[in-house]
Image (cartoon, rainbow, N blue to C red):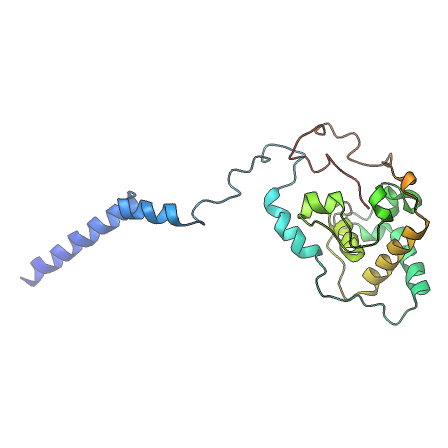
Length: 211
């Protein structure tokens, strides 16, 4: 009697498991209702585009470069001292991931590749920030961090570092001598000759440039 009862229990359990594995009606409804059931990145329309930025990485990049309530640490230096240190860092190739590119490599003379919007006080809109990180506007410090991660191919600077404070102060100081008529693309712009440019919505270089 006990053996028969156990056998019946096993049969019932097998039916339940088989129904779940074969997509029984209830299991199908649960999967359809689960918003996490399908990976939104699985059908990436840019997956086959060698020039594309993965749209699923946008949120991760935004988290890396967003300043929020963090205040910069000038280390007790005056604005003039921070600007001087920032100018040195602006020309330092050691900041790049490969150790071969400086901020001034593309921003020649301080203004190369700067769009007309660079004349506006921060925070303001920057195309690269909007396209690559989904940010409608950025602070000067966030723009420095974006440049560290994207063109410089490195990690963001420590938010509490004097390096970030000095680079931010230097970039802000450049605005004083900037004339919107100076805006234009720099010949060193790696996106200028991008064979994938030309209206491709997945192309991160389609509206390149920084400010």
